Length: 172
Image (cartoon, helix red, strand yellow):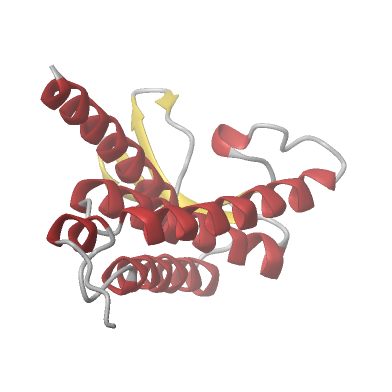
């Protein structure tokens, strides 16, 4: 006897496409991230900068730490530590996507974080550091340089917050 899934179960699992669109988005993010970093590595030396606007420069920076260069001044153990965290996060996110692929905003957020995490793990494995190149500043104050992967992770985090706020409001 054949079993059928309810419409709501099908939607919560993403219907017939499942996680594939979300994994596709993550792959696109990794490709964009690695392409932009390859351009920076090919055209810029470490420390080079190009003035773009009064508040934005393209630079080449290497980050051996985490966000905002956290732990960058340590002896090198952090490369493997942050790589392991990135791999563990990727595995967890794929598992979450399998369970929630039909929840569009949540899955979009997870795909952005997944793509960004993989992009930065690729850097750590290939170079021992993450390539950063987007530098925003105001006067003499500079925000830490970042990259496309970091932008995707940030966008994903914002979307997760919005998704949670919407979920809580629906529950009231």
